[in-house]
Length: 269
Image 1 (cartoon, one colour):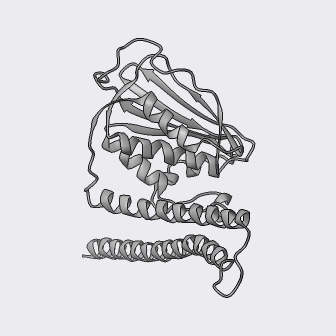
Image 2: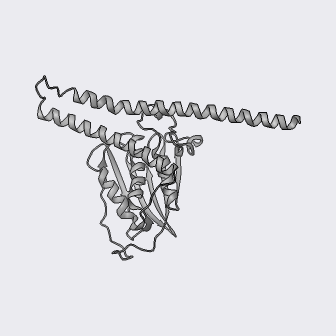
């Protein structure tokens, strides 16, 4: 009857609209990927043009600058490829976790140390004196912290500090990363975890394809944890990762002083 026809028409129109939106999203995604690939490729092309077989080699200092620039762009391309591979595994339900009991303080500190060595940003690392055991795939949790710190750096001014902390809260471990950057509006806080989604005015000026936070959330959820975001435009963002506590870390005793205090260091772009 007429009611059934109206319902069929409504559902058909909704399906057509969803297919159209999906196609537009795919086109936008491909355009974004092409844009983000072109930038490092352009830098590589320009860098290599300085070393030509028909011209004298530049000075050693100049060559070192060229090789440093090439290395940064290769690492950037490698991160992009890694994000794509992780997304493919997640969507296929094939994200493999090699879990063990680890001290969250050691995991976070090892990541922060990888970022040290530049005067661009300062990191303030806060660690408790007692062991914070978590049952996790340490490589994946280090990936989570790396992505969050990288995000904080990308969206912060060069002189703004990044704050990283580990806490033990009842039956959970809390890992937090805070910045004082551009911040995220209320309407965009959930959307930042969607794949290929970049929000706000920074989406045109900050490199990336919008997969980092999507991968972070899925890794955290695969560990039985959750991630929360507190942010406001112009005041910065704080990402909080909650993970279930483990039973203990082999080789550690539940007493204070397992790790020496960490001095704030500078971390690179």
